[in-house]
Image 1 (cartoon, rainbow, N blue to C red):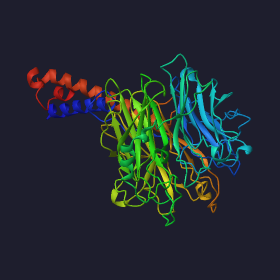
Image 2: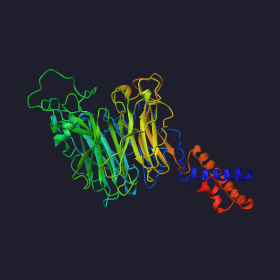
Image 3: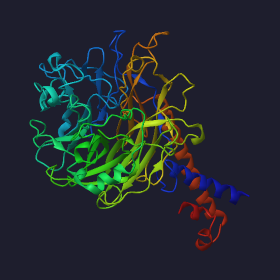
Image 4: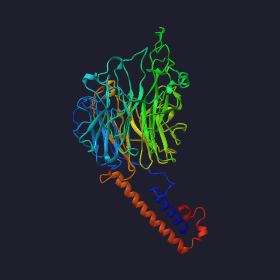
Length: 571
């Protein structure tokens, strides 16, 4: 009896070691979620209306976290920053915008209003739209800016990436519709190489010769001081008759995607009269990533104009090994009416070329209106082939809850974190959502259970949604080895009865995988202390078991290695 008990205790000690991270066969423990923090607590104006933020963690100092603060009422963008892993925040006075382009907020775009990223030496880059009253506000001639700061936002040097000011008539251009990705390559050049992508629209070109939205990119090889001319990411792929024909076979009526059919004959020679032409095909929602060799990959969603019924959506992948001078373009998977918001990230895990990870909003049953899921795929051969999609949300599929607009980040240790908006807790208030997330520590082979980040439902009858603005950017997400930090816009501080209006703030929370700085939450400190105590107890029991084996003769080394023995368990 004594022998059996001590053997089991020794095994328990080994289990504690594995749970603490020393054993590869046991799953990583669940992270500890911190209590949400109101990032915009310093703004006491009851009319404040902040929209979806973007967050970034400084790789050189992971306790330094920054977030964009785009405010719909003032139409201006600012920065908030934390030096303790997101537990407390302050806001510098300097603005990233130019005096000539003071406004950044642009309405009804399903993306973040501005994006932030760190480069080498903790240089901070901030991509944002820019316009003034003379540019007709939030519809026409919105330019694109890139601000850089070497003092964490105390001062900025800002460059115009794409200047649309002064364009008239059908040439009026919205280059900030919206900014879709900002990536900094810190390895390939003597200075940071900056990539910015956006969805360009020419809103004054209307049917029967409307211009489809197109995905564009600009490149800076001198740390953001100057940028290339815009680069069309479709790279002529729709010049292919076969590519267009493959899409045209999938035409279907999608609510709100095309005008109602009419019996009026289209004007001769118009794009409507000749739908099968490259000019009717474009794309949007470009998401860019770069690998260790400097190869860039951009996932984007196809978009069409002047075609009724509409072509079903598809995700394309543009690849360049020469910093965007030339591209090869391939399609990822097949067409589907419900694909949108692709997010692409590269990880060094998975072989010599690393792995491309892709998440997007899709639908297991696209024929069911309102049903959507979070799809994940990956490629380990430089985008030549992709795995079949898998669904990351783990709610009951029979209940038809919608999940959408995902985001993804890769920690330095290769951990994948994916966050999204989730309606599974909506009691029927019209549109109430939460932020959920899942993570993977084995390069996407397996995923954790879904974890709710928000501590209460966000009521979208209040704030910008209640004012008929579709400013539905993805939840903000950035990671370090120690934690993943999430950001979102939240209406909890609105006064009762303020439906259709009301206060909207920015909140953040973190999923902590290990202690963070000196101000770590009590939950994490207690958890780590408990783990340390269990580890110590396990070691003591293990030593006691082995000493006991020596005293009472558990058997020869050969017997001790048999299945079920303490040493066999340890191995």
